[in-house]
Length: 409
Ligand SMILES: Cc1ncc(COP(=O)(O)O)c(C=O)c1O
Image (cartoon, rainbow, N blue to C red; front, side, top):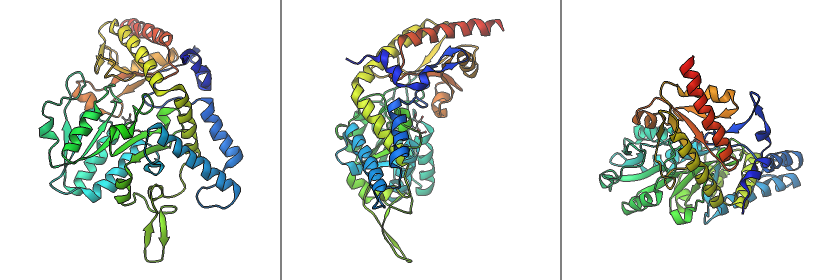
């Protein structure tokens, strides 16, 4: 049995006071806080093992290489990837998606082809495809959403057709929290022979993910949203696909042989990791993965379901509130996006900050989605393993106080 009340002790920053209040950190969809084991992993690496990897014969270089490769093994285990070489370290989800668009996209798409995404996507799963269709003259099609922010699959057979070469979709919407039935869409994609990309930036940190069971072709996520440092992320890809793709960037480590006239490419994963990678970040991500695996991803998901239900029910009693996205926590991740009449989300965010509560306000890098739902912006509270119902009580009380405050100024 995991005691989630004690987990807060593992996170030094959560002792902070902000504007004379104990910090309540509800901005986890933007980035997560870091446990001491991750901070220590970085400090230990730089204090004891720092060197460049894959190129030195000296002790430090071999130690650094071992730690970097060990992190990759842990991540493969974490998402049940059949092969460590299917894990490519990138800067994060954004770079992973750009890698697929540039490398796979430019070599596989032609004019009659289409790419399918959904109306729920983060900008980083829209813009690379918008740019790719300009270069390949292929088309971009969207799976629409219903008013509750779930996917509308009524016309799916007219959207995913034999011309569809790629389907790239988010598992969990960062804007409104919808959990998509990705298994169902992957099956439909396979029936027309389309390649599948899952943007798992908001799911890998919060629930069990098994790429072998999903049978997706690619899956992307970011370390910083799962307790690891910024600047490190993952592209998982099926081995044969990665092997068939041209390199994304060119330089050191990704080559087999270079002459003054030409070069040949190294095998995967090296082919996609040009230059000195974020070695310390990768080791930090390995430590974060270990920490999450010890707690158990299903335990984390269950904890977030409990908090989200509690917060949803509390917030529903706030005067005039509009909550975006589905109500059912079977299809809602641990985040709640909302608007309160006559209070701009930025003003609410500033008010809550004065009480020590950190939330996100704005369009959440999902401008088309927020607009489609009839808003310009929203306030978003997003939860993680260290949050508690007690914090939700204080949060709801301060929202009610903000309504009194803004109606009196
Ligand atoms: C669903 C989703 N996709 C992609 C991204 C981009 O991630 P990053 O900024 O770490 O590259 C985010 C970040 O918020 C996200 O929530």
